[in-house]
Image (cartoon, rainbow, N blue to C red; front, side):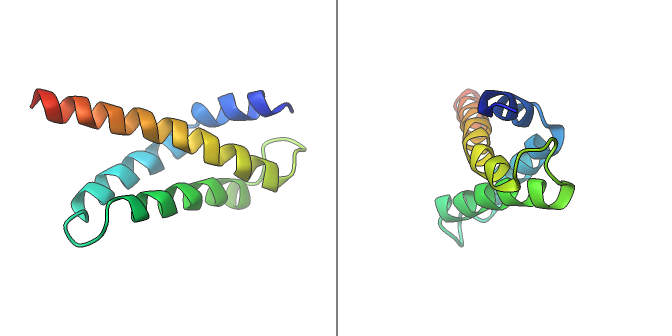
Length: 92
């Protein structure tokens, strides 16, 4: 499976999106006690590793490939979520 197919499949994964939404909400709640970016960075790596190793890779590609592409797809989803949060904060 080419990298672009893996990337697009991961962008549309509802489990991945849900985990990243929960990550953004949790990071917003713990921003007072912790730095905001350290938990977000660790969470992005955690989600990228968790899904391929717990659910197994979708096709015959190795799990390491799914993790590496998952880091980029998580960063893309996270950028969209943080942009939506910034727009909501500005409008509220």
